[in-house]
Length: 92
Length: 181
Image (cartoon, rainbow over the protein chains, first blue to last red):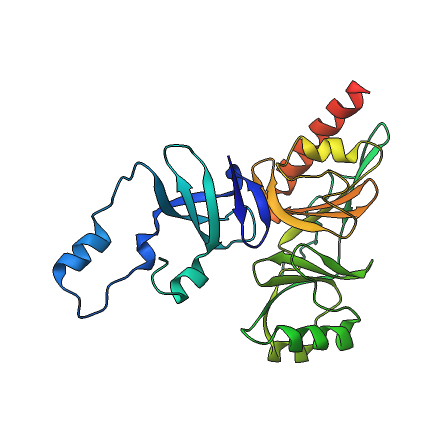
């Protein structure tokens, strides 16, 4: 498996560390209801299909990236810097 | 006071020679991590040029020449190798001294690329990884900085604490490549 780091280009999977669903970029506001915080902290989808995850390019340039991939076909559809995704609003 | 004797990271382990391949240590006087502040990249590059004679390197590139180099060292990070950084650079970037923190090795000779290919997943094909190209990658499971210095000459850097492991791993790979010839 190879991931395309937006900084370094195509690299081997072993340079990266997996973090989890990119929902971590969608932190609720301070006024949000407990249900929103429950979703943010605990509830995760387990999609058969396209999913978005956070990966850390630990053995590489040290960037956090959002990788879009397909859990059925194992196709990697793209990657963006997490910092840019967060600025663009929650990474969606 | 105890009189401590300074040692280089690979003291007593290199130089090594296996067939046409050599592994030697480079011991630059200073190494400084330079992290440009947001929006100050061009100003930093200009300051670097006037102070040390080389512009800031782009992603995956190295600038300068032997003795004073600027190495791309990760996301928004440059490593100045050789000279002591001019104080004025601190206006545009965060500077941190790394001088004793990294082991710097030079692998050279016919087959150097085959040796490195045994240790890292990087695409080392000559057309892809050219002279002056650099990358942060995995080398024998260690976080490394790998730079192509010449036709069959590479610089490999790891944390100082991993120097002995790196020398050990490269030495084994050198032996295997030479044995296959």
